Image (cartoon, rainbow, N blue to C red; front, side, top):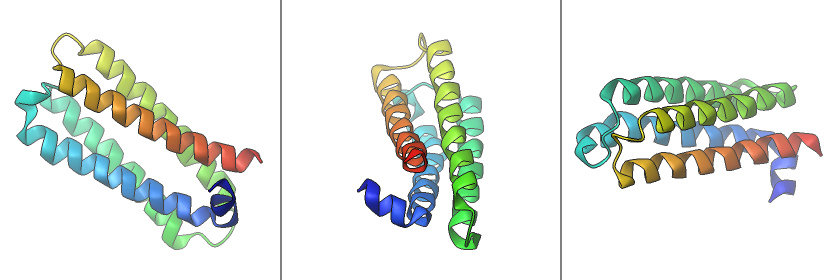
Amino acid sequence: MKKLFKLNLRILFLVDGLGALVTAVSLFVILKIYNEYFRMPQVVLNYLSIIAVLLSLYSMSCFFLLKSRMQIFLRIIGVANLLYCCLTMGILIYNYQVLTILGATYFLTEIIIICGLAFVELNTLAN
């Protein structure tokens, strides 16, 4: 699989962009509608969803527009994903007392998935 990404870095931008879009929709729509089961403050969901939309726009723009020099742009999104995970972890720790188990599980799962993607992105560049 790593070889596939190495051959076509654009695929990573597409996966990243679509994943960030799914995250944004989850945060802005699903978690807001069913927030009684998660209990993350609404303002936090708004900010995280805005960040996810911006990351999605960046990745999708790279997917559609870049023809060369993709490595630097992939490194940027990989680092941005790690920073998003750090932010989300900080928010999770800060709001841990009000979150439900389902809420904590959702955000931990999101962190694991995004960190995994960032690892693939950055590891693809390293080799």
